[in-house]
Amino acid sequence: MRKKESTNFENEQFLFKVCELNSAIAMISGRWKSQIVYSISQGSDRFHLLQQELPNISETVLARQLKELETHAILVKQEISNTVPAGIQYVLTNKGCDLVPILKNLCEWGKLYEGGKEISVAPTI
Amino acid sequence: MRKKESTNFENEQFLFKVCELNSAIAMISGRWKSQIVYSISQGSDRFHLLQQELPNISETVLARQLKELETHAILVKQEISNTVPAGIQYVLTNKGCDLVPILKNLCEWGKLYEGGKEISVAPTI
DNA sequence: ACAATAACTAACAAAATTGTTAGTAGTTAA
DNA sequence: TTAACTACTAACAATTTTGTTAGTTATTGT
Image (tube, rainbow over all chains, first blue to last red):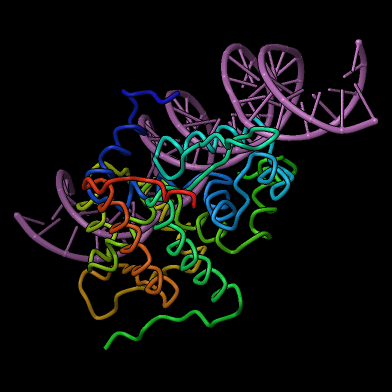
């Protein structure tokens, strides 16, 4: 649980006020989280499908990350009706869907420089 | 220091292999980090200028975050020559510069939904 | 000479995140 | 009816991140 009197918490709040960038980063930071969003966008929209994609994640941790993404309204839980067995589906909201292309950009950025693109500094004129 | 035998570390490595997205997120996660990148891009490129922009950050923490950004080649430290007093300047690399527009997108995304844009789910057809 | 500024570091403590263990409840297939 | 599958939760422990304290070195302004 978060301590509301800690410097850590105060600094987080400070950054949230400086720019929405910081709250955005906070929502997608955290082990597994953005990968879960991406996997759901690719169709792995059920608990057990996500477990298959991420074999190292424990059920407890997966449930926790999903709940946090739900708290931030990036996804919602929906009961699947008319199916046997009835199950739970995770569906990205419009907010979550809008995030996906940004995650793709981040991915491309990472690939570019991992892939050997030279890193340099623009010369000062 | 990182424990190289922990589940936490192994899971991090697993995600890094799944997709570059996860290493990208790891590079920009962390208190202050993306705000520092953005502030440098806006011209606050010296230690004391960053301290002015982020009055709640301690020197130790700022130095640490800058070093981590340097480790990931997002910025480099440069001595400013021909100036009195001679100082240190933080300069974004091309990798760091390429990150800035993505951070701006994240910021816009955050603003949009904080600003009251309705959050909904596309109806299943 | 002395205080102030700039740019740090090491060692430690506090807090937060991540992972583990041991459970629950409802359905289904053998 | 028993085992397996799906989808969880609470309490706790391990690990990591973040912040604090107390220094350093070099330069500058008074």
